[in-house]
Amino acid sequence: MKRPYEYGNEVARAVAVNAPVVALETTVVTHGLPHPDGVTTALALEQIIREAGATPATIGIIGGGIRIGLTRAELEQLATTPGVPKINLSNFAAAVSSGQPGSTTVAATMAAAYAGGIRVFATGGIGGVHRNATESGDVSADLTALSRIPVAVVSAGAKAVLDLPRTTDEFPAFYRRSSGLPVDRRYDSIDELASAVRLHFSLGFGTGVLVANPIPIADEMPSELYDRALQGALSEAQTRGLRGRAVTPYLLDRIHALTGGDSVRANVALLRHNAHVAAAIAVAGV
Image 1 (cartoon, helix red, strand yellow):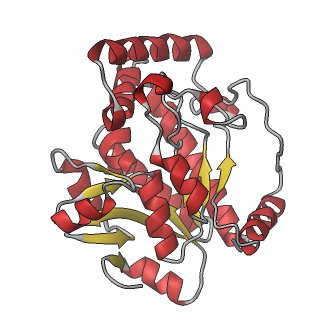
Image 2: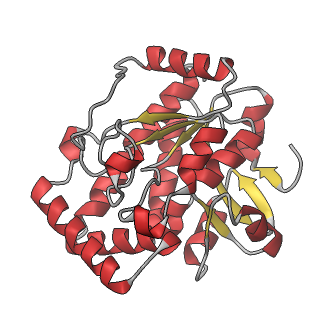
Image 3: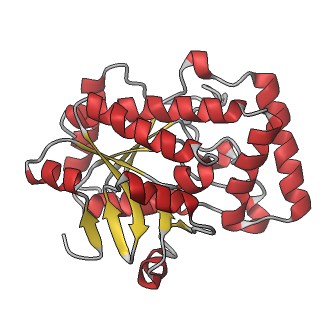
């Protein structure tokens, strides 16, 4: 691996001996959760992955380099630097060349993970088709990345603020276990799931795999609270005329406020669950 990609020490040791590694993104640190919850959660996810027998590789842009395996100090830097941009495929090169810090979205994390030889990635929810996309054209680069980058992404479905039927017909609904949209394949065994993922990669399609991992039953957000907060946040965003990268952070922030913080509780729970499942997949040999 050549610059601008750089391994952290722990990840470098794991990659050198072909040990299981799980990638983690950093928009949860800068945009997904309020500070200091973002850093605390990121460190907790790393520990879950270690305890499951894999090595965590939290990815972000620091000092003009794409860092695969951030230190705690680097996580704090991302979390406390004002105006850190979210990095996706379209602004990746510009962000790195600027020398300024940046947090990686699902798409950018997939790209960096694949470049670093990492095939498993745990996140919260992927991006997708935004509501009113027929007028705005807002479709996440995460979908493009899944169609082009062979990495297994473990998520709790598409983010709840998106237009789920237009995104897919297979996802759970992030804060909720079900979106009412049926799935066509279910795995209750990590070994069977890992085997299917390995086979997918061996066929050479060049595409990613999305593992939809519903939030645990005990951690679901109550449906009435979820619906009320989501509709309120969507209405406010429409009134403000928000589009593109500004939409999701705004909606997540408003849902946090409108649920009295319950969305953060649910978000942290699903992130932890996804990290556990991703680590198990990596340990199973993906």
